[in-house]
Length: 275
Image 1 (cartoon, rainbow, N blue to C red):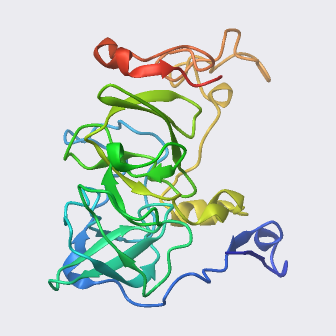
Image 2: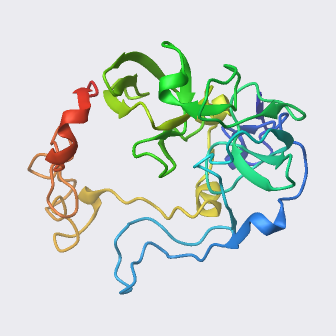
């Protein structure tokens, strides 16, 4: 897939780029797999702001994605490749032999008309096929990896991401994640073969503030531009530097400060990600 540029008829189009969407099939989404997705504006169930810089944006319908890939030993045909407004990756509509249809994440080099399968046994090492980690050879690139058996894939689901199986010891596989972290995952967990598609997503330049508003992002304001009541960096006469190490609005250091608290799962991390 390529990146397209725009003639600078307006100032906002001068640095704006977008995807050409050559891979997409041009079909409308499959209605039985759509759900209403209400806007939260960054508020929780009490109406309190828990995530800043969220609000507005175009209306979207949620596509129900099959992260579990639990349609065991039933071949499926790739019907469409579609855009999903809720994620950076593309999605594909799969029609299984028994008539059931499900959405999955679109791996790199998966085409319309291709047949895929999910199994607990050894499968062909082709993009889109899913199986247990114990059946996948070392060195294979995988995505949509389960952390807990039968819970569904939770790792490596964004556009262009993929992990690699480095070793298998006992009941665990050692997997190198895109962050360079090496983590142990149980061999009975499921993963999908291949790398997630839409590699050019990271090369797109938004180009103008309005396009961020379409995506539901409100303006990000620097802490030094605020008042002391709003941010620890706020206040001062003239253009102040903040007077302290960078912190979040709640006072937590933002550069190099470790916030991981879950010691229970510490044993599964073989090597932490590099800084």
